Amino acid sequence: MSTELIYSDATKLAELIRTREVSPVEVMKAHLYRIEALNPKVNAIVTIAGNALQCAREAEAAILRGDELGPLHGVPFTVKDSIDTAKVQTQRGTPIFKGRTPDTDATSVARLKKAGGILLAKTNLPEFSYGIESDNLLTGRTNNPWNMDLTAGGSSGGESAAIAAGMSPLGLGTDLAISVRGPAAHTGIVSLKATHGRVPMTGIWPREPRRFWHVGPMARSIRDLSLAFSQLAGPDGQDAYSSSALPFDNNIHSNNRSLRVGWLVEPGFGPIDREVAVTVETAADALKAFGHMVESVRIPAFERDFALDVFSRLHVLEMKPGFVKTTAGRSEDEIGAMARFMLSLPDTPAADYIDAVQAAERLKDGYAEYFQKYDVLLTPVLPVPSFRHGQAELQINGQTVSIMNIMSATSPLNVTGLPGISMRFGTSHNGMPIGVQIVGNWHAESTILHAAALLEQVSPVRELHPSL
Image 1 (tube, helix red, strand yellow):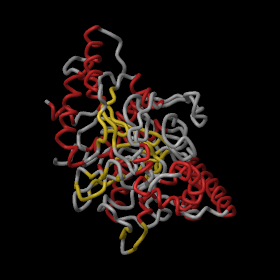
Image 2: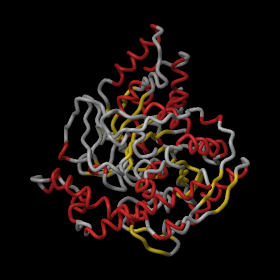
Image 3: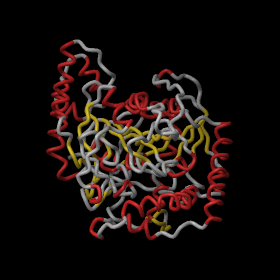
Image 4: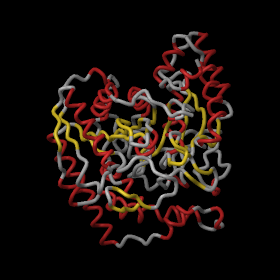
């Protein structure tokens, strides 16, 4: 029974709990035992919430009393360690914040708790959430449950590994340029980066700059993403970016309208591994088989402005003051390689910064034009499947590119604020997950969740879990 519990999605667990087929205590114990057994190898979990089991007992008592139950009542969830959790350490992957324990929950955490979820644990990340691998001086390196020699990605790599390994059914990650979607693709789970501002960033480091930052759900099923997003979305009166209170239709399986779908592998993202390209085209064919209009597309704005370069020129200048302030007066053994690298980067000249601002507007215009004709865009999530820890370069179709190119297909959505889903739809020759990215128009989360739910029905790999 515990094996069934650890690989059930959050929606199923909530149903089993609501119908009293299992208790919240049973569910919590199953996940705690799983963490005890696997985390020494995977290193996804960095702190267990000390009151998790007591909260599960209280959730069970509420059921026995006949209390009104939230949609996630009794379901454990995990949270990336850059997101504040009341009375539970939030150390941000750095010795600088070792032992830091917030008094209040981030808005996103509070909303999952209000829905009945129970905080189980905090998950690993790169130093300050800056990095494409979840490794830091304080809590070490997270391994990919599918192959311990390979990365689980960053910056929400601990979260993705925990969910893939059955240590958590549902979690929260943050995304600056790749960070919920890339790790999900590395480990074969699903994640949603919603339209910028749909979910408040209140209680998450850094407070500023945050115009490219997002917080979003990571899970084992598309319906879990939809359920979690329905609880997370909406303004909180503190994050000015989250001013929109647009409605969201959580009934993603009832959408019968015909979709107009374009798919794109190259050009615009740099070189893409052939197995990844085939997976994207296979997903496009699957949507076509459902009767939707599907065709290969090109987006001229991508070919004019490389979004990863635009992002880099904008964000380096914006984030450096915060890094300088945070690390001031700290000893070398408190500052990791990524922070030292970020501090060493030259400031973007004013002319280049202005050009990047204008390029970002051109990219937004390019997407706006695209979504006049189409409802969905299918792309890669990553240009390659998961790779070895510590790589500095990628070899793709005979070309050598910087490891930073891993963000080439995800960063456009941060520059523009568009929503995107990462989900597995293929397997590499060496057995590693391959994901596809489903992109929608601004505030069109229900559309891409519907498209993802269709793909989930026919995914050739949806039942596979890593052998651990």
